[in-house]
Length: 255
Image (cartoon, rainbow, N blue to C red):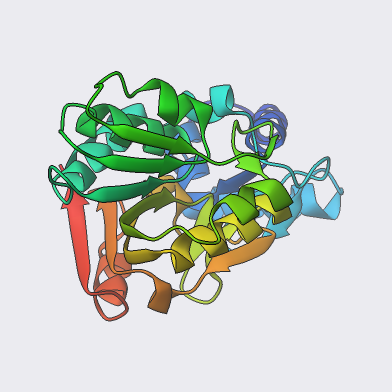
């Protein structure tokens, strides 16, 4: 049964959701409002025609900003899925290895799952991630840089910090992902930093929940060929899972 909200009420809430998050997928809006795909697509078309949102492939983007939502906003969403993804990603890390961890709420969850390991070397551009590590046997290194609204350290100083660093595994996440544009973010400085982080890693593990699928954001920071392992949740469409299996070495469905 579809939501009992009137179209105008639902569309007002859609605009508020898009403005709050910056970019939202069609799938996430369908789940949020309990309506059919046709209804959401019609809503987005009408809102775009009224210049209240920007319609993009697979979803919508706010007209007000291309910036990342804050860490606090990201933290509120898909918590169960993020924890499952983080736990699955932690299985790829063992004692005595070097790990890069980019900024983000899924990355912070990942950090909490590996902080009990010993003799790790961890490199991160996130103060939130760094705060998860209390184990004195862990060698923790932070980049410099400017702090973004998403609590990522970005900019030339952050990039320079990564120039001579090599890690065995990088765990990162994405604001948006689709087949054509691959992995993208609304923040150009974050995109530049992530490109360098990815180039520093022997293996790249990408974690994202189903709400990110089918969305394109402002700037691509990684191609499918840059990624070794994808970890997503069971709500990601089956067709997407099959497509990804042809593009990366391993796809893990976090339970």
